[in-house]
Image (cartoon, rainbow, N blue to C red):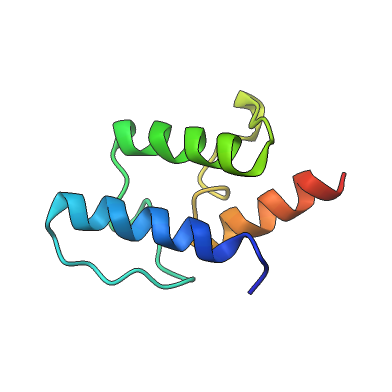
Length: 83
């Protein structure tokens, strides 16, 4: 687990709690397949990542691989911060 993963997990868990579905969020929870992220929450997640980690997520990076899981998002943030 990298240092970016826990804040992302916490954010996604908060989204799940708001939805009231009681879903457990783990580092490998599929975000799109489970329907945990609707279009509004997807935008909120991107805004959170950009603001929290000081990066910009270009439209060209949007895709199912990016939103595969909290771990894949954390790995993306780590790559963006390094390069």
